[in-house]
Length: 101
Image (cartoon, rainbow, N blue to C red; front, side, top):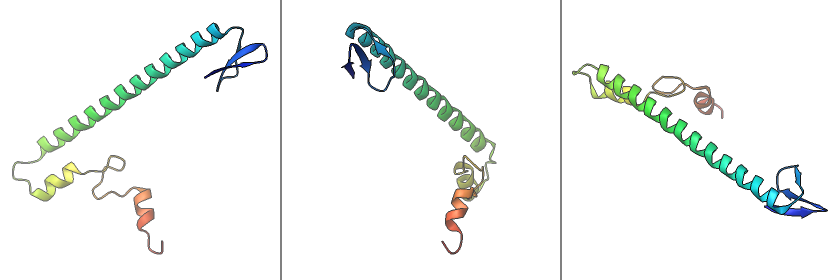
């Protein structure tokens, strides 16, 4: 949002002042484009991370012997991303399960 403050124009959330409304509007458009590009880049990074996780998971499943039990297959599919254990032994998980809480 652009607003007038004294003799200058400002963009809400930014400390800079601009001499004309058009100047402030062009800067705001650049900021919005930059925010859109940042969001797209973040989305692409997340997509790549998910694809890598899926590939690793498929490789783990392929490494299982053909005579694996259903339990072994379930463990390979449900390994925690943080601690790489099944069941999860992350600190946050164990803290919630501590006796007396």
